[in-house]
Length: 103
Image 1 (cartoon, rainbow, N blue to C red):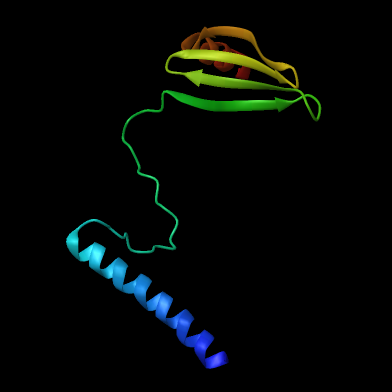
Image 2: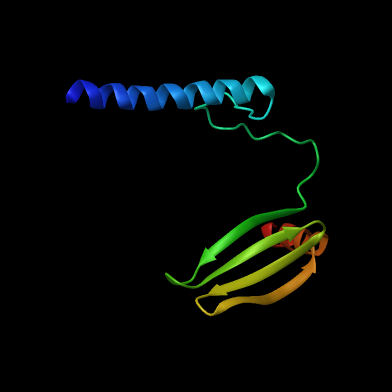
């Protein structure tokens, strides 16, 4: 009885393998090779249009995030209720103020 079950299972897997081989040969199925490596990120020479510059955690559920979008600086408040625009200004103005405060 065990030999009959084993031969039935092997027959089903053999039939599935033959069907897959036949479909692949006809071009109906394309199988990509397995790759276990992490995909590499492409390094673009383009400047980033959107990036998180800094963050300040106010509480476990509240924070302030400074985001640079092209030539704009956006300060966003984040809470469990949503996102809030706190301030928006030119990035150059913000950099000039930061340099003035360093001196």
